[in-house]
Length: 99
Image (tube, rainbow, N blue to C red):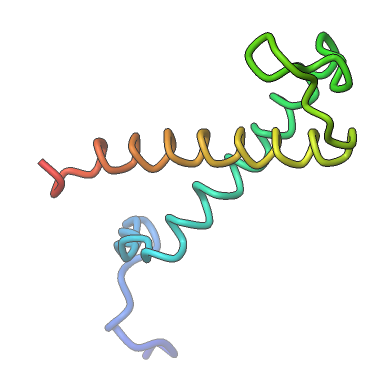
């Protein structure tokens, strides 16, 4: 007589993994925003290695007149928004039910 119940599958048969639920809306948003945040930081570093923030002008006329920190902040937010928009658009186009 065996100790174990016969309801368990034999050890030589692999047990299929349980299907994963689809990611929630909040998880998708956080994945887009976090990756866009990281990319925006890299973009800002690459831009301001080449561009002096105090030498910026409004389309060739007057100087911007903002502090260096304000220029860095505005530029980062612009990069973050554009990168997040591109990520959201890519996810929307990739989602099968969006077609």
